[in-house]
Image 1 (cartoon, one colour):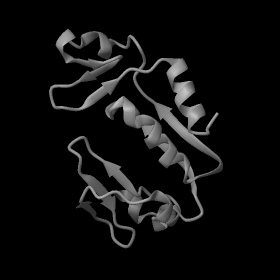
Image 2 (cartoon, one colour):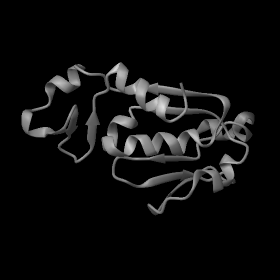
Image 3 (cartoon, one colour):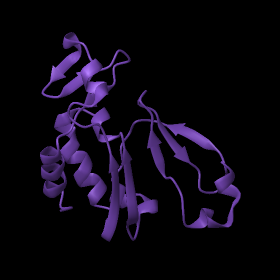
Image 4 (cartoon, helix red, strand yellow):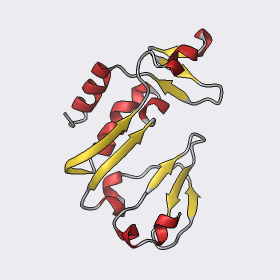
Length: 140
C-alpha cells in the first residue's frame, strides 16, 4: 500500500482484482483503501479506467483458474481494452507441471482441467493451446 502514497500513483494503478472466493476487490482511486463490490460485471470499455486503453495486462496464474470454456471470452474482453502495441504479461501452469502430477484422478474434471479441494479450477496449458487462444483473441 505504500505505492499509493508515492508520486507515480496517478499513472500506475490496479483497477480490479478478483480473489478465488469470487469477490471483486476494487482499489478506490481517490483514497487508499480497498473495498469489495458485487459480482455484477460491467463492460471494460465503458469503465472509466479503460478510456484510452491499457498499456499492459498481467495474467499470472489467472487463466488456469477459470473454466476452460470461458478462457476465450475472457481474453477477448481483456484484449478489447489493450492499447495497440500493448503487452500481456502471462505466466501459468504448463502440461506436466509438478502441480498437475499431484492431482488425484477423481479431481480431473476435463481435458487437462482439475478441481482443487477449495473449488477452484486448475487448467494446464500446452504451448499450442496458449498460441491458439491468444491468436484467436487477436494478440499474435
